[in-house]
Each structure stands twice: as C-alpha cells, then as structure tokens.
Length: 190
Image (cartoon, rainbow, N blue to C red):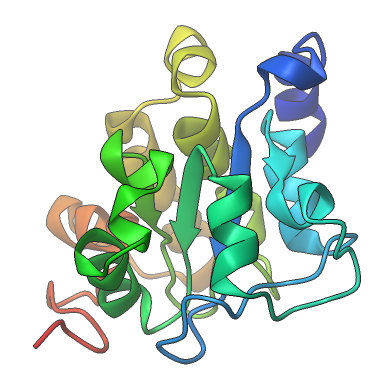
C-alpha cells in the first residue's frame, strides 16, 4: 500500500503539496505532535503532503508552539489519538486556531483507531495509507477508487481477516470517523 500511494503522489511538485500538521492526541494539547523522520511524517509525505515540522525546521521535536503552527498555517490538520474530537473542536473554536487555513477550508480530520491507532504502532497502519491519501490528496484518492465507501469495505475486510471479527457497516463508519464501535468518542467534547 505504501508503494502504491507513493506511486500515485510521486509526480506532485513540492510547491503543490499541502502542508500537513499532525496532533498526537495523547493529551488535549494542540501543540503535541510527532517528530519528522517518524512513521507519521512518512505516511503524510508518502500521501502527497509536506510534514509541517519540516517547514518549522523542528525535525527532532514532538512539541511545538502555537506561533510556529500559525506561521506555517497548515493546509491539512489530522487529529489522532483518544483526544482527537476535543482537539478538533478546539481547533474550530479557539482564537487563532480557528483562523488556520485547514480549519477555514474544512480540512481538519480525526484519525481512525481500533486495536491501535492507525497512524502508528501496529498492523492497522496499512489502513492509514489510503486514509491519509483521502485526507491529503482527495482528488487522487477518488480518481483511484479510494473513497469513504471503499474504506468502509476495506475496514470490514481487514478486521475479518486479521481479528476474525466482522464489523457492521455502521461500526466501520464509526471507526473511520475516529469513534468507538458504539459511535461515541473516547473523550467526547463537553
């Protein structure tokens, strides 16, 4: 999957790649991310983006300042982890953050998770590649049959194959939206 996604995006010039900022979601902090040269930067760049920490020249850092994020003004923001819904809400409502390009253009995404976070750690990271492409390069994804509907089918097939559990379509949709199988956020917005 990594090779396929890289092949689909290899012709995109650096100037045409959207800047992607990732929020780790291990706390409700908007400035906790993952360093460049990590699995996160790899899938973001493979899916046709520029990882924001490279633009910030903070390749080894996992903590940034709001000012650094505001200066980069990312095109896409992906919120991972269990606090992702709280973070997405904060991005959409907090002064400064709500004016970022990704927020004003509707390109803030929650990231799926199940046994592990798709964006890192385990076997589920192979699902992340198509999901990242849908978020970062939606036209390329769609042109190559990678859509919300195809992702739902991929999720159902994946978990049946690797866990011997068949998710319902509704459960797969919840997962795609970063929700638990019961449709609730791990840490809901209050």
